[in-house]
Image (cartoon, rainbow, N blue to C red):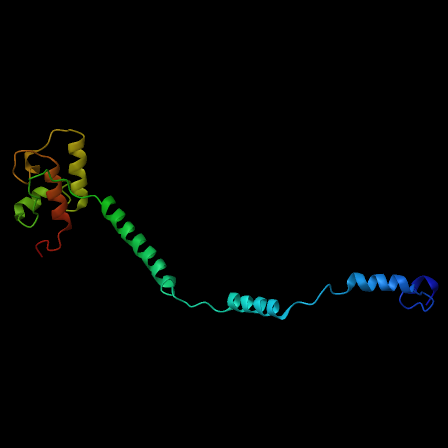
Length: 166
C-alpha cells in the first residue's frame, strides 16, 4: 500500500489533542436521560395507536358494491323499457287484436302479396301511410273506415303472433 491509499484512521501517528476529544465527547453525549414516566406514556400511546381496531363496519364491504350494482341494473332496465317502442294506440282506444282476425283478414294483411304475413307487411303499410299515398280499402283491417296506424298495428300483431293457424 502506498502513501496515497493510506486511511486516516489507520495512521498511528495521527493523534487528536485531549481538548478536541473532550469537546467532541460533550457534543455527542446524551443531553439528559428520559424520565421513566415519559417513557411509559410514549410506549402506551404507541400501543393504543398500533392496536387493531374493532371491525364494526364489516358489512359495508359487500353492501355498498351490491347496492351500486342493483342501482345500475334498475337504471339499465328502466332505460331499456323506455327506449323500447310501444304500439301507438290513442287514449281510450283499444289495442287491435290479431287473434280475432279471420282467414280472409289474414289474406288482406298480406300487403306485399308474397303469401305470408310478416313484419315487412306492417313496415310497407306504415311507409305507405307516412308517404300519404292513396290507400286501398282492403287495407282497412280493423274496419273503422280509415287506413291508419291502427291498421299497421293489426298487421304487426298478426305477423308476430305465435299461433298462425297451424
